[in-house]
Image 1 (tube, rainbow, N blue to C red):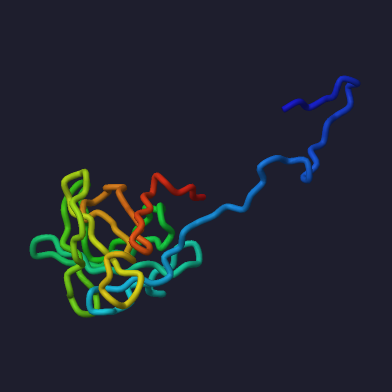
Image 2 (tube, rainbow, N blue to C red):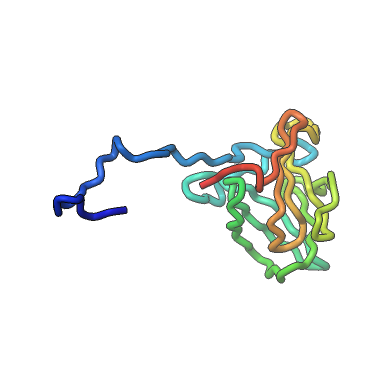
Length: 156
């Protein structure tokens, strides 16, 4: 971008002349449910002003709570009462009823893609999938039976 025009005058950008100005779009998970219908989105953990997804994790004899960002594609998490090691596999359950979060597919990393339902009924056609391997970036949204992979969505 040039600072001066051909007459030596300073160029000041005018907002109405900017090209491709669009609002940032995000996909926000407002509700997700365990197999027994408990809403896992909770105000106990807040991410950028939005309620987080709170889950119970089990590894061996240890267990704790993790909170995940509800912004699809944001891998921010908070861990309480448990230390997570890179690449380990976790058992993930509902913090209210201890129902195991169901597997709907195998992840390319060798872990399992788990399904959090976007409606209280157990319908895999409306779910958010995430891997149970620590630090695996694979995540998907299935809406109306159509798969939206993170790589297909332009975020932030």
